[in-house]
Length: 224
Length: 234
Image (cartoon, rainbow over all chains, first blue to last red; front, side, top):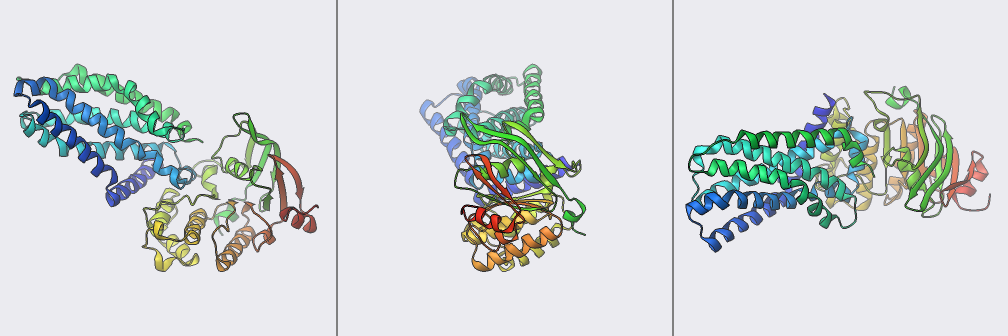
């Protein structure tokens, strides 16, 4: 119970600080909106082209959003050494990681939900018919992005050249996840949309493996 | 009865080494700090005081040696949660108010009736009127008061203070001295790094001087104790 109560208290803090400053959400939404709009006007894709290239573009935008969004997670805790205060206060250090993971996933999902209707209109992709399936793919993909990104953010926050380190570590690790997410999304954007369970199973496995690894070794990530 | 009275804790550091690359921050430090003792750590900048305190807080893992607490504290109150730590950094969130900061840590520490405890502490540190102000609007001294309040939330049985008077005005130093005195009487074990003599150092029952990561003096004798704190030859 302590893990859950500690996590919910810390998640409340994460949400309060973000919604008070709106630093991450504003920057990220504006950034990926620019990507989607610029690509739309540059290539002026037909519906068929959007179906082929849209999923890749979408996940690339989400990847950029995640790398912008995930970096400050643990960096903020370095400013006043609040991470040490948290480590002295929680009953299970995994709560610190879990709260950041939940917050990052939530922020990423909010960004994606704000972006999707604009993407649908600009790229002429009908999304309404596949909303529940797409939500599932987005959730699993975003969870994977957040688990990996939050873990690496904890590692890179204590390193020199931290701003450079996170994308360097993140991109190779996320390649399989991005392929699976893009393929699953492409199947939903097709003329006859289908939910590809093979790619979904891959996403679920990716999320579980990374979550378990962090649960087992997360305490060491937070040490100085 | 305060939590400190119910959980008197002693510390034992055995042959502690801490290396950062090839540099020794601490070298073969062995200390036994009895429950209820108030120990002042002295030494020049870079002598290893902060590292020693962070190891005692279990925030830093020693490169070699062993740190033990006695009695061994078990769940649901793991050792770290019996420790109050005031560090160089304030360890509070600039984007939260004083009250939000203290409530956050009170809830994490699962203190019964957290709102009451926080209100009492805000009165104690003289920040009740400013409880709704963001910490980033505070002066250094006010931030230090919040930092000290955070460390005292759970009346810890081990209190670690790293130059706790930083930024405090004379009234603040007096209040801190009274608080340390009260906690000492209640049975808390206190380890504090200090520079020179003050109302706070006067409370020390033992002084240890570190030099280049090693213990070079350790005394419980009143006159020697003062000389250790003022860097005079004992």
